[in-house]
Image (cartoon, rainbow, N blue to C red; front, side, top):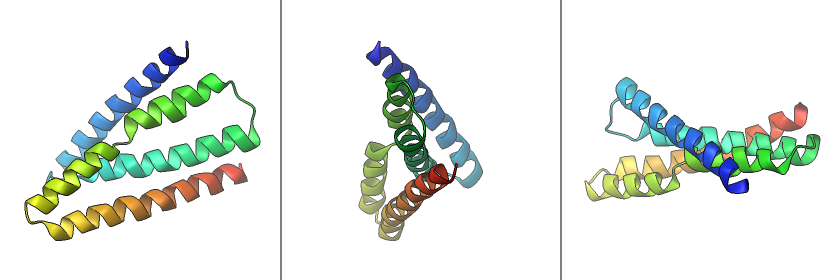
Length: 123
C-alpha cells in the first residue's frame, strides 16, 4: 500500500514537472531551464509547508506524507535535471548561465522552503 501511495504521488509530480517545463519553455524559451527552476522552488515550498503542517500542526495519516512529500514532491523536483542542465550550460560555454542556475536554485529553493515553513506555522 505504501508503494502505491508513493507511485500515485510520483506520477502526479512527474506529469506536473513535464507540463511546467513545457509551459516555461513556451513562455520564456529554452535557452535557460526556467521550468526546472520553477519546479525546484515550488517543490521546496511545498515540502517545507506540508511537512511543517503535518509534523507540527496536524495529525495526519502517514500515507499522506508518502503521497505528497515522497511521491509528489519527489516526482516534481528535478535535482538530476538541474545537475545535467547546469553541466550542459557550462560545457557549452554559458558559464554565467550555469552559475546563475546554481545560485537561483539554491537561494530561491532555500527561501521557498523557509517561506513554506513560516506560512505553515502561521496557519
